[in-house]
Image (tube, rainbow, N blue to C red):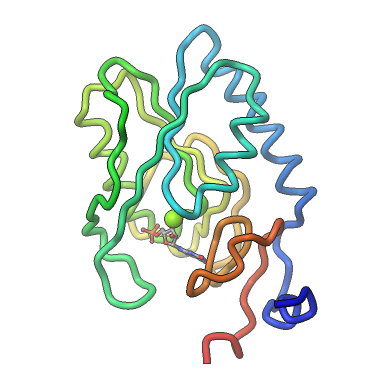
Length: 183
Ligand code: XMP
Ligand code: MG
């Protein structure tokens, strides 16, 4: 796939590479301050959060440890149902740890709301959420998110870890998908 093919699949760029990096630097500085003197475990949700985990981890100045989870939300097609299955669990014991879940995007909020409750049941000192993108208009449950990169319109987006049929994850920016791509 050459770059011209990719451009033709996108309707609009919602966040450039530079904007993403700048925002991550800002949030990392905030996290460094908020967790000063405490050990932090950042938990990336596979596969979408790979890019944001890599950039956030490198932007933090404090010591962090990293672990990964993979979950799949049962549901029809692109709608998440809130019934979540763990595909890959953490290797870390959460007892007494400060945990920050790192996600690519919050849509309905159902997946993260389940995940947060799941991790909270494992005896951690705290569980907070970082999401690079959020679609406020799509929210179905109220969920307390401590760090949000950017609120975006309720459109299907790709890039920076986000995929459509496993494609576009490697883009450095985030854009909305052109309707002809779904057809
Ligand atoms: P919920 O609705 O539970 O779902 O908050 C969150 C998960 O759904 C996926 N998702 C998207 N993936 N572009 C994507 O590539 C999107 O616009 C989008 N919206 C939701 C994503 O896996 C997220 O973790
Ligand atoms: Mg995801």
